[in-house]
Length: 297
Image (tube, rainbow, N blue to C red; front, top):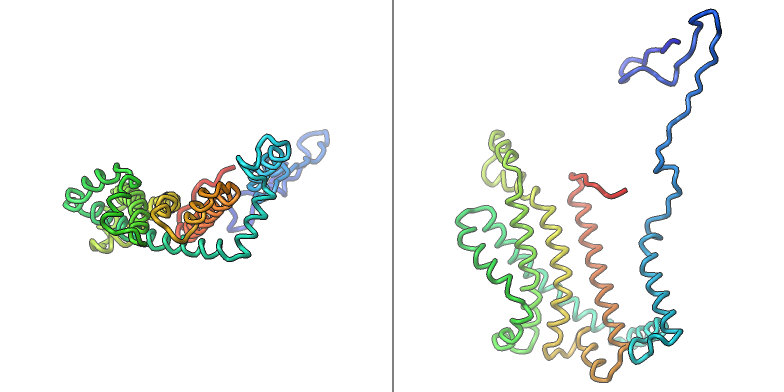
């Protein structure tokens, strides 16, 4: 048997050109080379979008089945068909789009303020020891206080307008971002800092090229947590004498025992939260292309 050598520039012999020759008085049959195919590639792959929609569709089918068999009565939970009809009526009348715009504005303002405050405090506390001594302890104390319990104080301080609603969302957003950004900064490998210093990077250069990129994955995780808490805080915020927004529609529906309208509002909350999470995950993929991670099998 002879093996032809690989052409210059290759990493090893050309296995595909293995041939047999006479090694004795008997002739041997040529070797049959069978390509090895991984087991995972031989399985029939179902499109991922189809797999991700299987759970919600199954839940929707179960809901319809229970409603059709009168296990769930309309006064307890309306059927999916009734929910869709009520949702279309709210969209057609313009009340639902107007409420969504108001709620989105409140979340956007609260998220922006909470991001600025939480990230700023984390930078001060994470980059400087004196900042940690002055900032971290008060923040750790405040984050253990339920922000819902501060609603009466916010009403006294800010009245019953938009200010207390935005303040509740801001408070709910601030602490998850602070904790994750702070943990990301302090989690940067010290050897990377030493390597940057040996290359002559200044303090600002280390922060810009080493510390902040290293803390970015934690910051994106904190942003995803903050978005979830922002929608939760919005539900409580819009109970404070609101005259517009999705929460206002829910309060009206509660007063008139309209469970179908309440479910429509809950679905809108869930849809907006899912959409916001999708935006953050897309942003995460764009900003963290330099960091290959495990994506599952």
